[in-house]
Image (cartoon, rainbow, N blue to C red; front, side, top):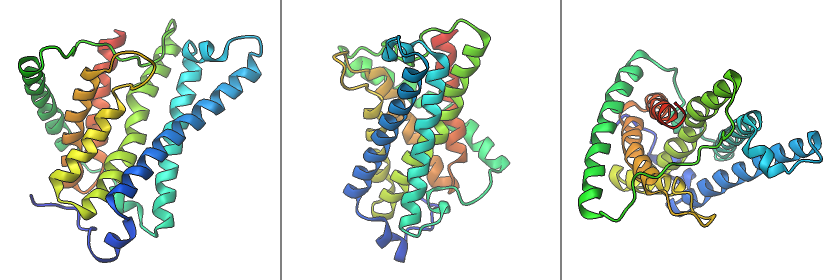
Length: 254
């Protein structure tokens, strides 16, 4: 595969660290940002509403959910940039080295079409070879109490716009770029996509694993890492990610 990622040579290779370290550090950034964001938002809600159950309030507060997502994704990006700074690597190393161009939009539209074609094929294969896997599960997206236009706007921003802006720099930017420095394209792509899919299974809590979300995000990630590889940037992937979230938002809420 021809590539536009020309950073994976010489000093950059040594500065990134090994694949196990990159995977570990990505998981630390992900969980730390999620936990710290939840703690901060719940602390603020507990101060504002001292006599109400905070966990229930967060689940049913569109504003609380919105600020939680903003804070979690913002922390993840900040930690990624801090990691790069500590290793003396520029943002271009994770695909943020140039401005978006119209070609990114064109390739995103192609990528989005390819993604849904691959998703149809994957769903058919699962239904044939793994008939016991439930692919009709509904993912808990939060925002369980949408009653106003403001609630809809907050949910749209928090579920469609913000997550790709945080997840792409972390997953296709930091993780994939780091793995790609040491591995060939397909091993780096598969590892990245498996981890991204596992993160959406919603492990824990006693509920069944969300295989539908895991399969969807695994296939999505394969398309996103290819766009990262072929364009040398994250912008096309961010747009595809947003379009996928837009479809999911429309199906789930409307």
